[in-house]
Length: 116
Image 1 (cartoon, rainbow, N blue to C red):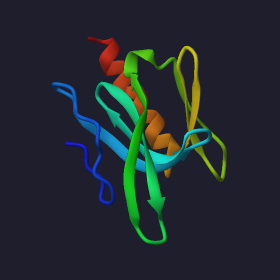
Image 2: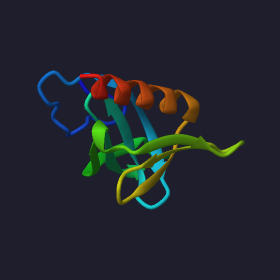
Image 3: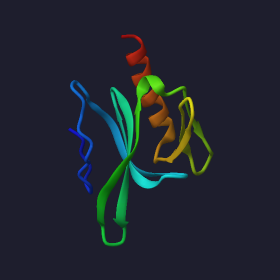
Image 4: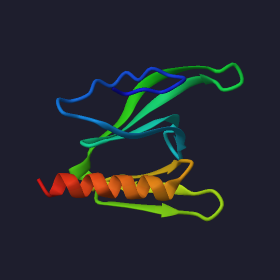
């Protein structure tokens, strides 16, 4: 279910969980990794390795947030954009290719969870 061209993910899906969007990115404090959005949660797995040799491996799961725990999501920046996720006690800033696309997808999944 969870797939990436370079790195096999280590997170096992929950029952009924579907991958919505996934991307190699970096977070201001957590470093490089793979950000995954499912219909149930937002996941960030740290990666280790060198881009020059194209050898990467998934390190450890550093973020596993159920969608109902996300308090806000927004895009920030003009040239270098980030998707900013806020929970009750933390804020994360992910450098993704299209922050606007991520914001829309995350908001749509949060809405679908809160409607249930």
